[in-house]
Amino acid sequence: MAQTDIVVNVKVVPEKISIDKETCRVKREGNSIFNPLDLVAFEEAVKLKKASNASISVISMAPLKEKDLLKNLFKYGANRVILLSDKNFAGSDTFATSFVLKEAIIKLVHNFNLIIQGDFSLDGSTGNVGGELAALLNIPFISNVFSIESYSKRIIVKRISEKIETFAVDLPALISVRREANKGAVVNLFSLVESLDKEVEVYTSEMLNLPEEKVGLKGSLTEVLNVFQDSPVFERNLITSNGEKTIFDFLKKVSI
Amino acid sequence: MKPLLVFKRNNSFSKEVWSLDLENYFASFDPTSRSANFLPDKEIIDSTMGVDFISRIMENNKFDIIIFSDELIVKETASYFAGKYNFGLIAHSKEVLFKENNIIGIVPGWENIQADVVSASDPKLIILKSRSIVNLTLNNPCVIYLKEPTKVKLLSNEKIVENPLKSAKIIVGVGRGVERNVLPRVLEFARLIGAEVGCTRPVGDAGLLPPDKVIGDSGVDVSPDVYIALGISGAIQHIESVNANYTIAINSDAHALIFQKSNLSINQKVEEVIDKLLVLISIHLN
Image (cartoon, rainbow over all chains, first blue to last red):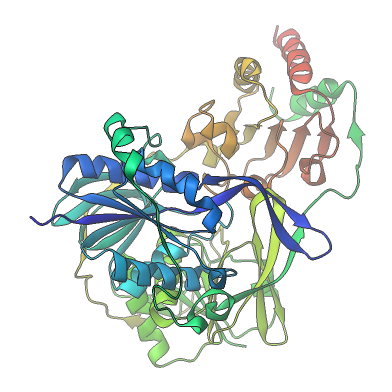
């Protein structure tokens, strides 16, 4: 069997975000971290790599400054790390993001048969990219996966909805995983040595030959009109002492 | 404005959808539903089948807006549908506003940030929180005959034990403001008052309580009579999933957002209040 590629889409998210009250824009401050659920997906890919002849290509759309953070993924077992970075990508909604990811996968990862990612990202929580990307690639999509049972010509996965459903899915396919899938990636010592001479590959919009009108704000099909923070405006009826007595009196009426 | 409302079972959506005089049409993924104008002939098991269902409805009907519930198979279908036909999808909306023939989704984000989002496509697609069933009893639904998906096969279907948080009358919610050494006393307090224990996502992530105890976006939705929020800041992702008749909040931060949502607001240290409550309860029980 020819070597196949497992693609892991990894999003880099800010550790802390806040609102610029004057511009109503989100300010991304401080350190960046990997989206936690994407790391869960990455660990699943590492397990599949060990049990098969596959290699792992990580793809991330992020600013160039995240190159060092992404390089860490070599230590955990990534064979390739591809950073898609271009000022034209700024402002991409989930559709424009899915378009860029699709183009990168088709043009840069020739033998892919499985794409894994987290169910949603910490900052956006939309969970749209999985379905949109799978549709653009015309491959099946299963979300909320908590267990991968086998992986060969097809993949067998379990997911939780109203019931625990077990699916056999023809490859190539895209699956997104939920938190319980594993406990997160751990450093593989062999990969740690191998990673020393590996470099993150950086691709711009031009290098991927992407039409300007299909990426970033121009390629987006949704628009954010306004951003605001739901913050307390007043303090009301705060009980600052003997709160236990008030609660106890209330609970006596309803439970104990 | 003519919306198509797509759901499996939960068709409550938000009050805005029901309060406006819209020409609503309903499509359910459940072939046994009696609350839909459009039904599939068999249960929809994956997003390709879901997309086939919606596409077939759209062949003979024009809708301005398609509103999807946030049930798993329905929202999975929504994103696949958006990708297949290049439609702008507003996801994860907790409520909607209708303005001048447009729909605005109010989308909660991280750190209590919210965004007003619009779609530029026609029709406009939106995924909207929908938590309960409204019985409509619509007669003579149009049945759409679907093919089995070719690339996905459902091998088995096991019932899962319902999370006890779903039916709990009283829930004690644990947030980051509860220190690890205080947790055993919180569990004892919950046991004594007959409450289930839930937590926020950061508490679950830290391993203080198991993942099935997480209440919120990435956990379960709950509807207790009483919710006792301990050291919970009140992040949207958590609090939007709590539909309690009465909320008691204990938090040492006077500015905690939870105090905007609570009926009884105790601005004291969680440990201090719990310790004194344990004494009061044990005296009462003896």
